[in-house]
Amino acid sequence: VSNAPALTNVVQGYRERLQQDPAGTLSSLGVAPVSTSGAQGYRLDNLAGSPYLAQTGLQAGDVVLSVNGRPVGDVQRDQLEIDNIVAQGSARLEVQRGTRRFFVTASMK
Image (tube, rainbow, N blue to C red):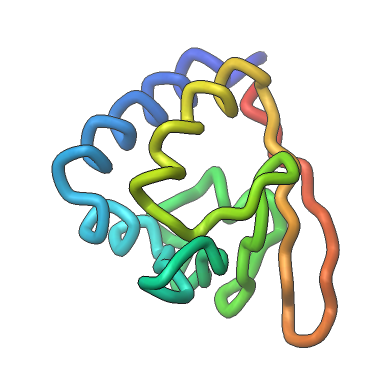
């Protein structure tokens, strides 16, 4: 059974919320930009608000550095990429956990 329609609806809802309240929406997901001065990644906190992120094996304290090879962390610019990620059906996340860097593929199918 595919969860793609449900996930697509969730992403659409977050896309709309991000346009209205980027910081509040990220906070509700347990995600915060590492820095306000550019794309330096998103630090993960409590992932209880985002079961899709939690399913990837990511943990509180992890920092997502890039998605599909593109640096992330600038909320305004990253909003524009949501449609591309959804259209691809998966996202390859570059993650830093402590001193270790690794990749996780998150499927949206």
